[in-house]
Image (cartoon, rainbow, N blue to C red; front, top):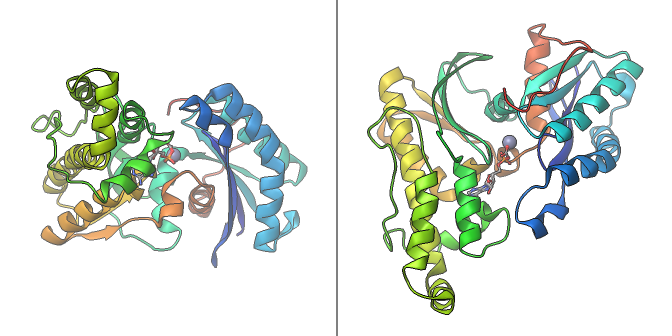
Length: 332
Ligand code: KG4
Ligand code: ZN
């Protein structure tokens, strides 16, 4: 069974081909247009998807050495995400499926982040997954495939959003997460103690207070010129201190969920799982608790169609197909 996967939920147009022998191709076309706006502009995202989708799919097929007639199904992310962006991928997938007489498989983008861990490995159920992206932050207990029980989630900003918004306050380009990660490597995480919210209150997260605290901290050093000089001198320390606060909260709640569920396997998923401090702290947590840890390679952490194709493959194996009434959902 060979599956074409299509992803267009945010600002990455991506297509991939997966079958029993593994991942055959994964083409990701990143939209550069959003950089100058400091965030994703939904209307521009939809237009860029429309331009990129056909060449991206053609390239994915050609790199996989597959023809349309070799496919047995089309998997497409139908939410959550930007509605206009999702509709481009979904409409394309429907047209492609109809014209090639293929079944269609709707894939939940957040579930796909989890199953990105299955592209190259086969984690054993049950497991916990800490799913951290630009739009979501949640801890899921997953006893069997496609049974996702959300134990906790963010009450306001997602972890990636916190990185991006605080990075913007520090004058960094969008998306600031990867830049802050790099800068943190040369910084002292104890330079300034930023707050960790809800530390003893269940599994939920909150990151909006951290953003406000970063802004107040910067304003407290003086006028605009003084702030600029302070940033020039201490940027890497500030990034390390913010990264420390975000990852501390993520790890603390994950540890609580491990104790509650007694699982022996932990997965990381989503764009923020590319973060080196989070990876290091997760490795330490896994070691201390005798857990097996799975983290996707970095190119499978951020948005990609390989994770859509592998999830579609797993659904197809279980007979979980959709039809032309499949809808897109901004929230799922
Ligand atoms: O999963 P993803 O590609 O898209 C969403 O579904 O949101 O995640 C993107 C998010 C952005 O907020 C980005 O800043 C963050 O992941 N991110 C990182 C790193 N790489 C990506 N945050 C911290 N450290 C990184 N290395
Ligand atoms: Zn994502």
